[in-house]
Length: 129
Image 1: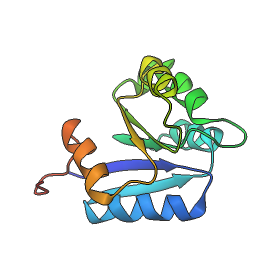
Image 2: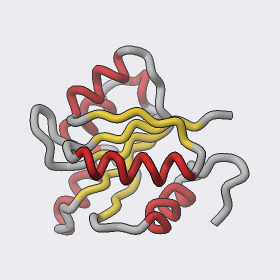
Image 3: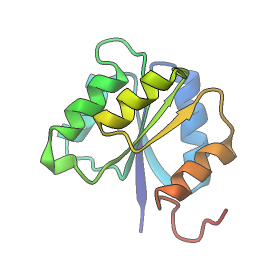
């Protein structure tokens, strides 16, 4: 079974890093440079199991994206993980209250991201800790 991830970040370098980590874990990935571009991908019908979301982006930020996804019943099963430099406790609480499942603070390691995915039950078959 293919596991899909949508990597949303306005930094091309960060998208490449996260995509590389997820690719090594066996994910099929797509990328978006901001929340609206990511919503466009979802509206096209591409259904990810996971979205990794930066907070600070132009056009539509990560929190707005989380709210938009959670407002659509068709996307309720998508796991949302914030991957951001926003490290204040209040920001983390806001993201989780909005519907994000997990929160990874930049900079992070491949192991830290993998561990969060394991917590969510999102490691592809055959991948172990």
